Image (tube, rainbow, N blue to C red):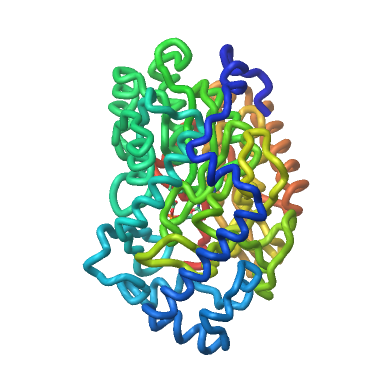
Length: 450
Ligand code: DLL
């Protein structure tokens, strides 16, 4: 665990909260539920009237649009899945005429065809608003310079960052991902104050900045970052904050529900506020589909209530987290989602034990002598599953004695065993031997599936 905070860190943490749209972000929760109910009714009618797939699903479930009278009736609606987006690719889920679709985004996912989402001009506005709120919560104002190092293209990260900053009136530097040295040169020359990229790329940028002899506190103007698109841990947050001398805020979203900005952290960094006037969030039991109360972990499900191009009804994200509507010190009343602790479909089952990569990451990022660059390699040997945890040594530790390195290995092996409950083969490898990522990191290779 990183204990010491860099100079200047404390005052950054105490920066005052800014809210982009207080009327929506701080609404009385009863009033918010009413608004959600009204918007839900409209969206369900739009879907039923215009999308044959929704009409057939609702007819099969015996629900008509007029049966949806408030947000309490949400539970009667059928679920949508990623497979539906593949099956009805590319345009069969559009609820508006194709001529009204002004943009397409997509994500490749891990298997097969991409999934795409169509946006009307209304949807672009809705999404820009969500991203403006997101950046504002991280401290962004019109005075800021926002470096967008998420990929710009079909992926929603780059455009999302661009639109939000643009809506605020900040100066946007649309770098896209990659080209790390140039990225850092521009960051320094232009005096970027806010960074948007994946947490794995933020780590890579931070390390490269240090290697180039740049002191983030003296030579850069960065103050905060909005990092998401992949799972990360509290330990990783501390590492990024220390490397870059910034506040690192989590940001969540998915292509099917607009993109980044569906939920965002404020500077309290106690979970991500969900833009509930635009989406309804539920947590369900992934096996039974039953709604679960706040505080219980389960699968996150979203229903869009303002989108018109490709609205989504009860979309199963397969992401696992908990929700809370406890008061937040920032003043927002929007409920918050906790960190994504895993996905129902990236959970590894090793010799019958459920293992989430995030559990292993939290051990590795907190351990002394290793860098937060790792891969998990799953295999089957003699009909038994094996899990190799390959992690890089830090430069210092790499040149240390063999016996010290072995004691680090034993310590990490023990910690992982106590967290996930199974024995793993921990392999400590040379610094920089694990491929770096400029976008979403690929950390698991499951050879059992080959
Ligand atoms: O990753 C959108 C995005 C871009 C979010 C930039 C945040 C920042 P997709 O490519 O469709 O969209 O992938 C969505 O990524 O279901 C989660 O599994 C994962 N994910 C996104 N944000 C987070 C996060 C974008 N903050 C999928 N923590 C989602 C953990 C995240 N996982």
